[in-house]
Length: 304
Image: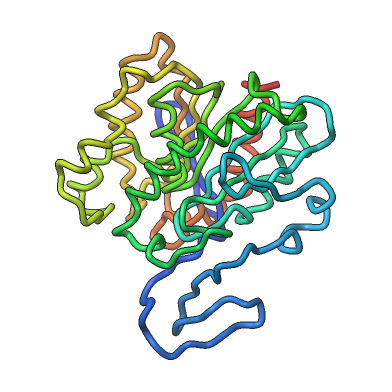
């Protein structure tokens, strides 16, 4: 039976598929699969090579190309050469920028370009250590800083209109987006999938499991750095039973933002029950298509 979407404060939720986990890096036996990935027992690890445009649906390939933006590997998908609104997308930890092309296809069909980048140590700049929980906070905060250079280089591309841009991300990518939003930025909207901006709350819930001192987590915790936050529409997508990034911790963060907003209704929560996804975190199962449709509608509303 399909998962039932429930409303949270007048809204509802969900997230992407295809996030691949990396664990047991030293566990034999090792097997190589037909697609060039390495298998350790039942788990898979990305090889240090780009997935390539062949990984994308044919309808995207003719509109997609690779480039470097501020030293960061990027996948650009452009509907045409006209200046258009765009989504800057940050994948989740242990995934890559080619993950979830269905999202990109929906955006292009709606006239919204896409710039997807690899997190530090992921995709084209693969590093096994960066796939671990121990590196998560460094990966997230480094990506947030790197976005400044990405945006500078995007200003040189006439088809990406920074005055009509949104940022979005899944899990660790969503957390990097939150970090970026605590400072100066050009974005007019944000999509946060299975992410959290209250890191201390999440750590105390024993779900993030970052092996860092609480003082170090507090130093970077977005919830304590909101003085520079600019009021923009937000669509927060989350499963209530998420066992990796707790729903309650993200709600606590969003409530902090609502207290600061002149129009708190600009923060929407799209919350799902029982998606069937791994840990209720890695994608939103059967609700994935519904969520993507809602996200594109959100982008169209606030960027077009």
